[in-house]
Image (tube, rainbow, N blue to C red; front, side, top):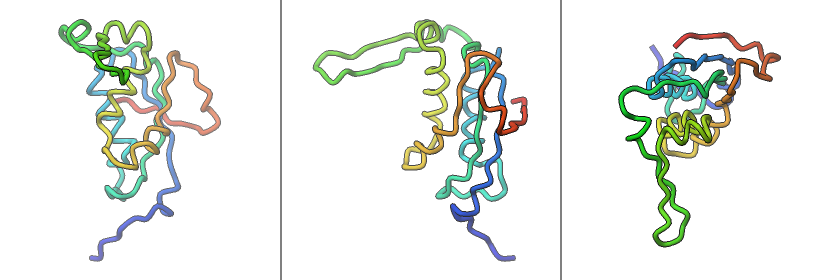
Length: 143
């Protein structure tokens, strides 16, 4: 049997999926979203081709975390000036910017190469249950 290597031209048929993040664990949800964005759930997966699908995450602000992560998990950001390292706990991030938490978790699970930017553009995060992507006819999946 001959091995077929997919090309970018063949990867244009992308599906749209809806994922409900309410009461889902943060990192378990992020790994499953990253698999869909990479295209690893398809038969035609190749690591050098971006053939993943679109993912719409509804209720992204209602994710759950386990243990003491709300106080113990720290996000670091450096401003570029000496001594200006900013620290923010997960609890503060969920209060101020709830969508950034899930975006960071998915971003860290995607490959560290040029394909990451195009994969992240296909991730759509929504705080409520209403979204503006109904014309694409997304199908609901439970993760």
